[in-house]
View 1 (tube, rainbow, N blue to C red):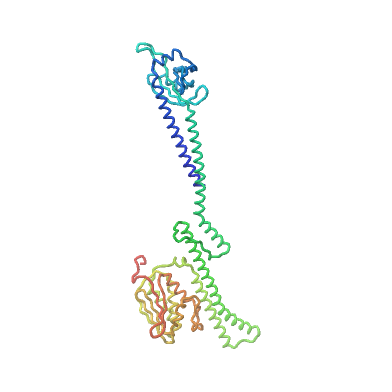
View 2: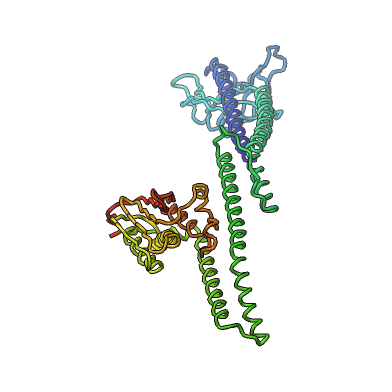
Length: 463
């Protein structure tokens, strides 16, 4: 509709302009013809006509009459040439021209004859008299006119042609605009159908077909929509997997906790108290299970935090200070171990709390798998943190899975832990722009390597 309206406006403007140009051109040609008709008239002929002043043409004259010719006085009296086609009505313009005969100016205008037919009139004032010493006749002007019938017919035909052409142009433009709009908006219709389908069925597998060589706005919108649905589908799959894994991991401590509490409750209800040693062991088991549940829930909360929540607290952090704080906590958890540290200054951009928790998780793993009285070596140089233990190491076939959520080595299932520690480490380091790897150490044990981009000195804004 907008295209049709714009084309209609443009065509109408062009058509009207064209019609007026043709009309002006036609009137110009008529004016030139009228000017040539009025040239033979001189003061003598005008004087002769004024003496007789016929009011109607002489119908007995056999000469063909193609134009109107008459003289008009300033009072408005018209004297018609005998061979004129008819009588032209005198207007104020004609009387005004007769009142200034010395100017001899020409005026052109439209009028009608005595029969009501449209005519084109040229009026030119002429001075008449018998000589320079003779009082002139009353002021007069010559009126020459031709019929406008043929010109009006031509203009009417032109208006009809322009109207038809304009109508066809507007209809054609509207149809073409509709076709182009439908073709251009067909991908938008597909996008709308896809959105409605997703809203109705929650099926994120739907995709909108996009031509590879297309790079218009709709194609980019379709590609963005496909990318969005792919990301949403992946996020939902990860969420479902997280819920399933969390439910599986929670089932074991909850079952153990429920069993221990039922034993304690039954002993109280039956009046047969458990031996002090057994009761103490049960309470210790309940405490351990509650601690494991609290740790698991905290890890799940950490994994559920959004990227935006993390990005708000990112700042310049001294990696050396973070590692030293983590080492203090690790030494409390493994007092029987020897933990050596060689740390060089390094500054990174990260969330301080999350980064410290990640380093603590790495050190906890080293403490957990180190033999009693063993040594853990920690080194930080050029932004690379290496934590090496002398434990049993990790089999090569298990290395690809160590950073998966809830994954635990078969040999470590009897040890405390939820299987989320290294997953949190990997996510935290990746968010800080770094990379973490685990690899077998030469001579036994495992080396955890963390690489973070940064600088040995703090940037000016950090100070």
